[in-house]
Length: 344
Image (cartoon, rainbow, N blue to C red; front, side):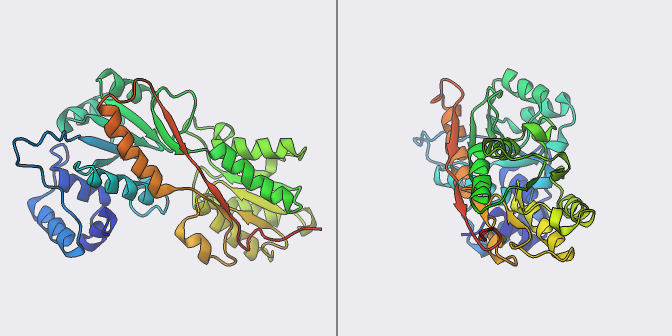
């Protein structure tokens, strides 16, 4: 089944451009020529185009929904592209038009957000790994439904669809502990609060370490700000300044995207995986099984999160949720060669 990403690649535009073309987004219009090329590509790839019903007796209520995503996570990101694919697929199944996809960087102030909501006639906003207190309050004050995806925090007063990252991270670190590791480092990034210490995967890591009475060394807690180049740099810096006998014997990485450059850093410092350093990732992106060695990871149901979010925001707009709900989908450990080594 073709996805928006496939159409974007065929035409040479971004996913957000394809989304705006399908929705006739007047706030950022797409040229008629580009629309024509996008439609042709969609038909060639077998993408089912949304056609509004012409039956006057059809009572199906269409929903105008905006997905707001950080630019860093747009287009080819192996995690969030799957979430968006699941979202769009479920919207299609529900007979709804595809959501308009915008980046949070487009809304630097309330006026821009207010203008976008007015021009698009949005009925719902899905915030994917993005939070801004002032703008969230603005959306709610405009009586527009808002839902968070991969934005799991008990302080938020909006419905959320996600997975339990604290429990999953705790299980991943416990796996490393069960393999005999006591010196376990962490590579991750900040939560929406801009602090890594409050990010769920770090909380789960810390919980498992303290539960096992293991030390958390400050210099082994690497905040990459979710940049893959920083994962490689920080891991290389750590290993190069320590003799191998003092290396951490395992690293839990808050995403596979951070784990893969960390693996390269180990190899380039003449380390062996998992004999010298075991590596555990999170998300189980498609490429994880093809790294050398194959990467152990936490399998997060990315496509299903998107599907559930689509159904939930439609139901929320229809008033089926009298209060903010939190839906947490289950994760599972996928153990591969990067961590499957029992230390004696």
